[in-house]
Length: 384
Image 1 (cartoon, helix red, strand yellow):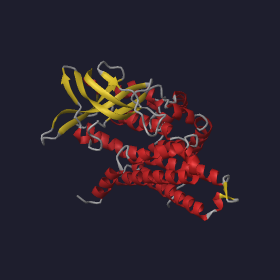
Image 2 (tube, rainbow, N blue to C red):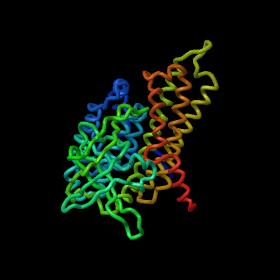
Image 3 (cartoon, rainbow, N blue to C red):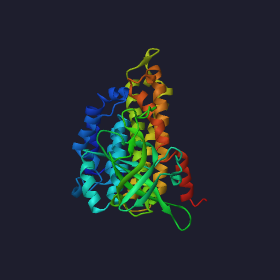
Image 4 (spheres, helix red, strand yellow):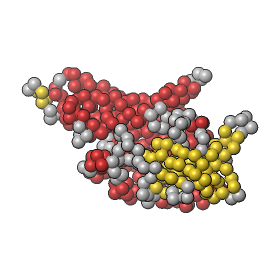
């Protein structure tokens, strides 16, 4: 029997996060966005709620839930604001989950309790200034010198990497050459404040203005050899697996933004009058909202389907790519239509749809561009 109804625990979580987003985030996030300021108090409250530990077991301070629970929370947060949502997504999917999946017991005990309650944030340094989608072109290097890794290189566009509570960044680096001549890429944990590890000032961004994104530099950074995460030479493969999960999460976030555009537009068309009638009575507006609902609905089904296969332990790479591609397109299209419905007011940052429009575009780029998703889908279809 097919059932798309949320279970009791997931529905309770959805309502809790929805209430938090509306009552705690919505009234204040616009000011943070305008000031381009990181919302530390909101993040701390999310930590106390256990949102940063949703898919992590209780022995490491988590909530013992599943990855779908994280997706539900992301959708509800993004209905109100994407900066807060991406802080949670990156903190869990990219910061904590690689440690949870591949870390030693000592690494887990050291870092996860702090990450699951948002006492600290974790980040993952993959993208490089000249690399972009070509993660295999990594130039950052790490060599063993006695009992230490010595890291040199740089990373770009790294979320949560420079906040006052950032505790670590896991970086991918070339640690050797494989028998086939290709680069051996490994993942290494670099604690914040390590000598030689420099965090640049915040980027001036089009959107996600209340989240933290920076460029990182490593100049003879030394960390213990025990900071290797997972197997040497498996860093790239580990991150590809991390990305598959992350794409489901980004799809959920995208659905939240798409749904938020509908929420705001329905409210507006019921109040705004033009030519003596509420604009919601005009068929042109009704059709636009019908298309917006269609996009959000089908995108939600797509990420639900990907999450279901993931939780069953089945291959879900294709479904994750489909969900991410479709949902990010839906978010961009809905943000465009919502801005059109609001007219001149949609161009003003004081209205949420203005923020939504600025935030939507990065969803078609981050954690794999739309072009990369199409490549993945084609490969899963057997096309070379």
